[in-house]
Length: 443
Image (cartoon, rainbow, N blue to C red; front, side, top):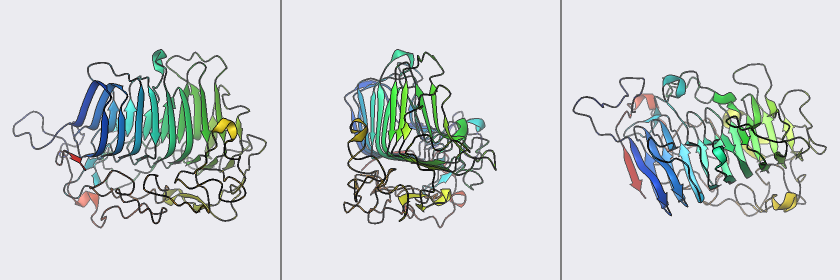
């Protein structure tokens, strides 16, 4: 890993021979109308992709994994960082960035983050514009944030984000953070931000567990922005489940800003950084969510925070896998979320006709709250992500694929995300990847 705090893992930059390594997989600037498809970008010393000043890019069936500093870094050293046009990501798998990748085992090792001198975002940008569309994608086990679009819209750049049928879990910071106007539908966020604690492959991790509060979702608005979170499943062990603020770089909000959170399931699992303290439901000092939170199932939050709306249910949602370390967001029989949500097309068309796995809604007499619809006959297919089960899994997806199906997500059993490679060999015993295996595979 380039500039790693551990000299045994650090790439040789000063003295010959320098070894077999490369800093980044793809570097792009001032680039328009580009498609990246069927790529596995892994094991780079710094980052998988360093790209800014983009316009109208499409990224499909791409995996970015095991890169020493970051996955997708939108902050260029030279040139214009801000993007514009439509940036579309489908079946995008971003994982284990901020870790060395062992060779030939391709396992995570020597994971590190900012307090140790590293970085660790799965996806991060500088101040940017553009209309970001992210569908059927997964962000997991990165050493800082999973998806970081916090700087979207800064400096009057405009733009918005739409995230559909996507997962984020096991990232050490926020699972998703988005600036400007955003629509999130059918997302599942498991904010087990303490994932890397005491892991044998996180030897130099430092004190970055639950960075930025570890809040599962962070929304940062500019003047006049509106955001919506509909049919989401959001759980976590950070300070709060959902953080909603006016953008700190230019806090010009005028009171017209709105954030809607409805038809969702939210559960706190206790504050990782403050044992014995409950997780907060919202941090919303400006009141952007006031009067706009309803039809949710909420539990495990600070006293008095539920109900936030007249149709909220303050009950155990009865997840299929309730422990955060092995979370499965599907709903068991008897869940209060079953068939109790707003109907398809409600909220101005935001309530979707399918769930996170592509299952039809409703499967019974009514729509289920949260990201998962129970009992549908449609069944998941390889174009949709599977659930968040086994968030403690430390194995890496098989090297020969970027889509969920190819990455070891058994679509015949959507509750299983383990088995993605042989984990009988401990990452620490496999030999640090350091600066080996710097490859971009076209699949």
